[in-house]
Image 1 (cartoon, helix red, strand yellow):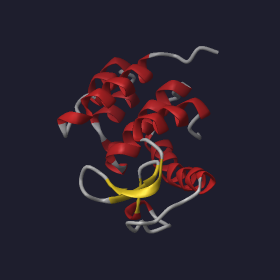
Image 2 (tube, rainbow, N blue to C red; image 1 turned 135 degrees about the horizontal axis):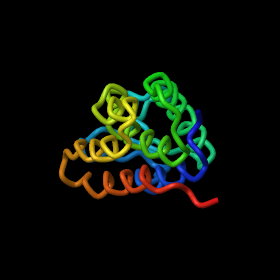
Image 3 (cartoon, rainbow, N blue to C red; image 1 turned 90 degrees about the vertical axis):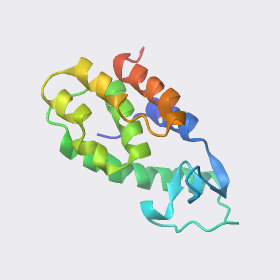
Image 4 (cartoon, one colour; image 1 turned 90 degrees about the horizontal axis):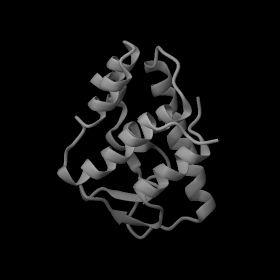
Length: 144
């Protein structure tokens, strides 16, 4: 299931969109929408710049990897807003989120427990605001 355009915009708002390489909070060279060398090509080097189109293309490739992992982990149907929120968390914390308490609770039919478990991913403390927005997104159906 692909992330919706609305979800992609919210993810971009959370991550930021930078066309020139910068050091993230962990001093990892990053470009575009949270893209690092660890995510795959292109490798990120300080001083590197990309176009807006390249940024969109890189994000699409990065998301495909996370979408595949999330799709494999989910055993129950989810609404677009739920999927987008879960994918946003996974994009931020990495593929280990696929085996998290949040996903286990969701697969067991406990949506409220899943929403609560999203907040367990609260390190560093500066990320708590982002988790609240992801939790809210998970709990709030998109208006048509």
